[in-house]
Image 1 (tube, rainbow, N blue to C red):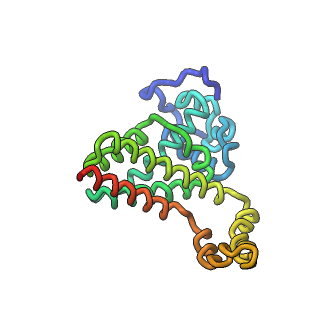
Image 2 (image 1 turned 90 degrees about the horizontal axis):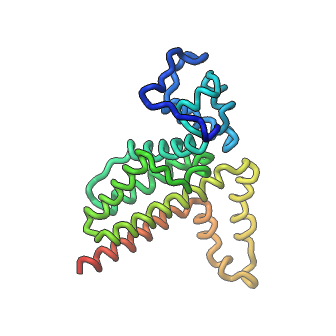
Image 3 (image 1 turned 30 degrees about the horizontal axis):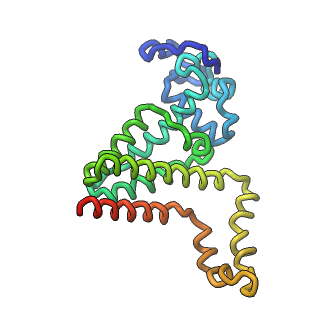
Amino acid sequence: MNASERVVPEGARRRRRPTKQGVVLSEQLIVETALRLIGEHGAAALTVRRLGAALGCDPSALYRYFRDTDELLLAVADELIGRTLRSWRPTGEWRADLRSLGLRMHADYLTHPQAALLTCARVTGRTHEIRSVEVILGVLRGAGFPDPEAVRIYHVFVDQTLSFAALDASTLALPEQARAQEVQAWPEIYARQPADTHPNIAATAPVLVAEMGRSGYPAALEMVLAAAAARLQHVRR
């Protein structure tokens, strides 16, 4: 898309006639279609030609909603955040709430691995992301963390979640054969290392194979929450 194109104000965006597929264009429809196409084609999906064909409209109509493909990508990123927030329910216990939110964020990104690779490093500045920042800081401040501690823990919590989401998504996005090779490397190569040359690998091989076959995020999340709890105890003292 051309960044110089003027985006039409919200109230004037609705098409007067349905597209060829019988639907009326909207920002939400474009975002959902882009998310689906990214899942099928990766970054190559973000062209006005592909989107126009999928929506059954003239590609130029997309300029009425987004200035360029980067703005659309930020909207896709914000939609993923919104989906997490819509399905998450706080309990009022800060540690349980951050745990459930982190695990849900991670899982939701892995549902769309191609989109995760494109969006995890982006700051959207849009509605859902702003709400997520407000919610997480509210959980931490409500637990009694002083503002500097709350912001620091927020930073670590979010960056850790997004980093693991991108890492795990990169594995899911591999071609099937490459992904299978990654999985089999642990039992077929590491577990067979001789004790005389690699005593530590040999001693831990069964545990190593089991552990490396799953994401490290849940364990890493527990470490962050434990460290945060220790900081809160220190602050209260």
